[in-house]
Amino acid sequence: MVEARAQWDPAAGDWSVSSVVDVRVMTWNVRDGVRSSADKSEGLNQWTAVARIVAAMRPDVLLLQEMGDNGAAGADSVDALTVTITLFLRGGVDPFMVGQPQVTSYVAKYSPGYDLPYVFVSEETDGYNRNVMLSRYPFADLNGDGRSALSDIPTVLPDVYAPGGDGGLRGFQFAEFGLDDDAYLGDLVVGNAHLKSGGGSTDATLRREASQNVAYAIDHWFNGAGEGVPDPHDVMEDDPPAQRVLDAATPIVIGGDWTEDEWTNDARGPADWLTQAETPGGQDGTDRDRSDATFDGAFHVFTGGRATFGNVKLDYVAWQDSLVAPRRAFVFDTAGTPIFALPAELGGFVLPAEASGYASDHRPVVVDLILPLVFDADADGDVDLDDFTSFHECLIAGDACSVHDGDRDGDVDLVDFGALMTRFGSAG
Image (cartoon, rainbow, N blue to C red; front, side):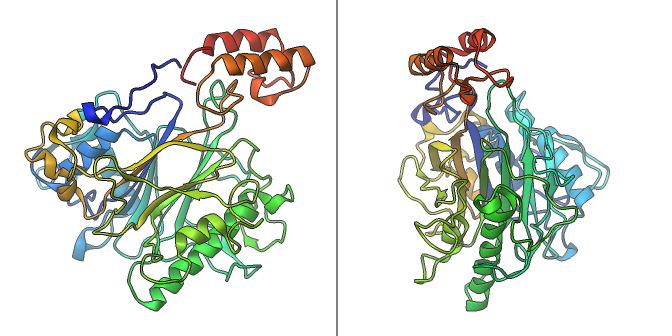
């Protein structure tokens, strides 16, 4: 698990994470760039641009919106889009094209050894688009409802601030992932959505109501609203029902194209509702401790701009900041990035400085997150002398100190000390 620090150096073309245990989450509306009918050959085209940028960023969890849209032919089926994603990641023979040609542009070609083997294609569609989540972490049933992924939250009956309903037109998909117990104290839950687009008042109302329902589900269903049991008000139409709230060290991270409207009116937009719920700064927020969660302040590394679509920010990643700390957050856009700072994975693209424009009309938001780690008592993302001192204090006192209980046997002993020493001085 040891990796040198300071990998991140965009000025030198290195956009990789600083620590092997940081979790990189990337959200991107790819504007139909990945679909069964796409031109999948190497060249100056959208598929190649999207594949090269994903290969350059190498996210651990990738949230994609506007996937599988074939125009007048409609949305790819779940099965067809799943096959298409396999081609996008690893290449192969294209069954969707006449003559079944070989796919010559794919992520693994540009970043050998990198893969996202766990794929969740949402069953929800507006007739054109689907949401998709890709991960290097395996799916796991964390709340005991017999499922590790949902295409939309269970229907919410009206309660407190939730108007009732679901996660909106295209659904708000969630997936539960199991992480390496040797490195992480808990696991991970991730949500992804493309909320209702459009500038009309009805559009704004629909995405706001979806955000309210999702905020309620995060607080009450996943986290138990501080009462220790899922859905304490019994208003989530969950079948089978969740049996437990998430582990105390398991954070929720959400992202997507939320069509945020806070830039154009005084009403609270989706980003506020999804992180703060009804009362900003209150005790009903979507953080694990019911305070407000945090949404990203990502910006372009070289220009400082925050826009992800035109001159506005529509795309977000948010996290429970009582459990998770951001190492960094950035908007990736080849426009405005000096040619010497472009990732090597874009070097073979005919017009590398224009790759983002070829890929989509949206720009991805990338966040590197520090999750709760075994032995990392000060939650700074590494195991160092401060953590060693903390371990020693727990060992002498005979306290449980769960952060230092490496083998999860309920105490801190010499076995844990041995595990600590294998991690000491490492980036996580």
